[in-house]
Length: 119
Length: 112
Length: 233
Image (cartoon, rainbow over all chains, first blue to last red; front, side, top):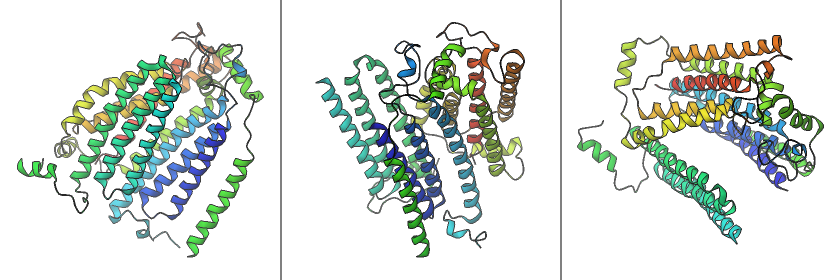
């Protein structure tokens, strides 16, 4: 039940990010759309790894080694998402750098002003 | 009983967060949007963490430290953002009457 | 008109695919075999309490190495796109720094309190990667946020870019050398059993995982600081 709600929220975020990416004219809003799509995908991946009544896969005082395998959530999607978050942030940094250079060349942030690469 | 109080506090915190988002959409210019976002979301954070204290009384000290950290960082960052926005002269909403920072800068001899 | 129609069609098509995903999803009741073997093997063979850090730094350490390479490439490309067209001399940089607007007192006081706390917190997260939630990447991001706070509070703060790039490269080389040492002395590339496993739950346990976390945290922190510094005018 909980992971269904989280999964639906993540998929909705991906849809909202995709809509913003396709319809907005301001470069910074397009960048935010990319970031939203990334965040939504990370949420979906983590939600798929949920095991009913499971807890975090950290074996300390409250969770002993023997019974751990039956009471933790799946650790593999979480490990994949750690990598994906860092890469998503790095891609956002490159997009912002490009936005700064585009603004320097034409003094406007609307992508309708950059028509040279349109066929 | 304790869980009921905790749940009510968390719900209040969620309502304040929602009002922060709504304020950021509906306010007329950048300064009022920053004010809505910071104040309401800081209070929402504090209420949610306070509600969590009622669920797990053993975590009280750690949650207090987190609340202190949020109170230290959220207003400071919003203050820095607002001063940067003022220095590049973002336009204010039409019926803004007083601009205290501009008056102080003019009095101290034309900009810093 | 055609554009709005095609956007609507695209969103509707994706929406239908996501709807079928969300409807056909059922929660797992037990772990899949690969996940169960990881949860069993990480405390037993690697001696790490945090299963996710054990996976990231030993079983799937090659992906971590690839991600380190991607971060380095991004730092280089941001420096290329945002760098000056000809490199500035020291006097020109000093002139730009003098004209910067001084920060307000609130930000300076906040930075005085917060910067040491952030540094301690980052070190704690990096060193406790194998005991509780944390690890190299998370700690490196917290270091970069501390550097950002100093950049905002003191506009004449100059990062020593040469020192940072040398540190970053040395940390990366040491990471790969630790991997090759794993090939020579233990089971495979980036195996963590080159150092003794130690007692389960102690700070210096789980073989080479604390060392790898430290190298990763230093590298990520330096790289993100260099990226942040290239955004300044």
